[in-house]
Image 1 (cartoon, helix red, strand yellow):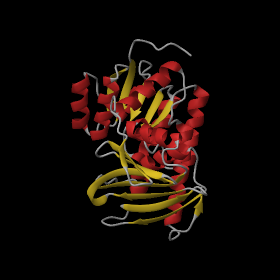
Image 2 (cartoon, rainbow, N blue to C red; image 1 turned 60 degrees about the horizontal axis):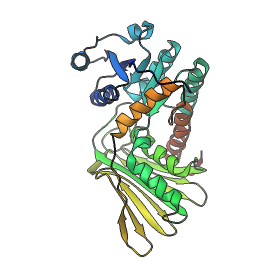
Image 3 (cartoon, rainbow, N blue to C red; image 1 turned 90 degrees about the horizontal axis):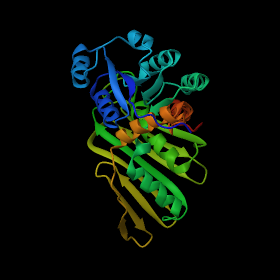
Image 4 (tube, rainbow, N blue to C red; image 1 turned 90 degrees about the vertical axis):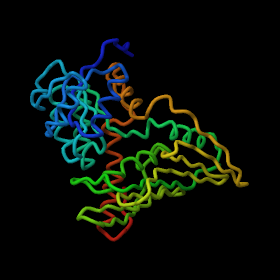
Length: 318
């Protein structure tokens, strides 16, 4: 394993919206990155972050041709992730791209193979993999606190956050699919999904079930719900555990109905931990938890769910 360098990695931020600003700040706060350039179609957004990080505003073409830029942070519309990531990899840059990495598993695999061939780090922003609540939940299940795992329920509900290029399934769903994969360690055999448009052509609500054989998982996604809910629950033969991301609490209920608080403090935000992991993978030459192949697997599940929604909720193999 190579030793970690003490100097910062020069990174270019592609996308200076609200989440892009959070990614840039989190990366900077790790002490492992220097935001060396910013790019955005919205000049005002770009200038704001350029001022904050004392970095120039540049086109993506200029970023790609600059040998001093080692990594790019892609936080743009989902439909542009593939093109930006491919161009960055071809230019020899390490790539962090927000979820979904691409709009198909085939595209994600193309990126994964290019990164591997060039020995570059490619990572997707599946932030919940770095949440303390999910770690606590995983350990409790592994210890057998609730017996044999039988059912997982995941809810991601709020009002707003509409995307023009992807529906609720591809905008919100990557979180829940990656959470369920982290808890089960495998892909479902098949999925079925119903999706509904409310105020536009794209679907704002998606409800799907994943069949793992003896285990089932249920996911409810909505961009038009009046309450903010981000919650995952796991039920087993001897009790249940719930991780409520809004409150940050993890609670176990045993078969006798007794409740036990399992909440552990989050040492740093999941986003900052994610950025730190990206830097460490670059510096040590290790594979990210959410690399390109992981992203492709998550997209396979979402593709199957999307196909099911077009077939009136029929079961579709993954």
